[in-house]
Length: 238
Image (cartoon, rainbow, N blue to C red):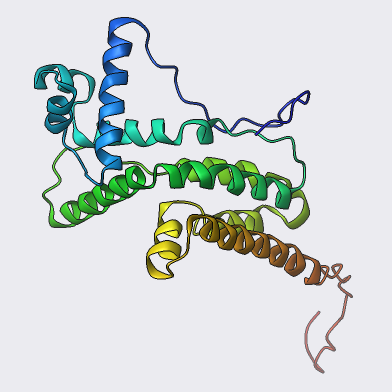
């Protein structure tokens, strides 16, 4: 979320531009239809999207050879501006707050789409464990990694890379559909309450990491080794 008149400090990821012309319009139709069906609570197949979009199955499969490829594209499209998030903040805590405040609205607006992607990912895991997944491409759900790494990057100079990586991993528990499901389904929170809790927890994580880094004792300077000679036993040869 860039501030007007200032140059964004980072741009962690960007979607490839949608193709133009007839092919671009057909792909747009397929994605819009897939997202609409997913928003209605379904996890549609390519054939079901083709039928709803009133195009042939052969045409649909030329654009999306598998359900996984179609849902992957639909999720990336639903995330939209989140993938293009930028910030001018230089403080890690403010950057993370900016990201959470910006992204949570979009994720919750397309909550059903993200739930459908998670459902398919879990189904693929189950089939992979059973050895029945075959060569079906996996649904990759790693967008949060790049976004969170970019948000916390200033911490590295303050607390070190290992601690920064741990903070990033911990923040990934708070950022995404899994956190939304826990806060809304288990705790019954509203969309705004869920966002507030996630943002509060993210802030607390960063503060704790910084405090822990400040409490660590400085490494001791290496001591000079004294040349201590052991007394020789009487009669020992030199």
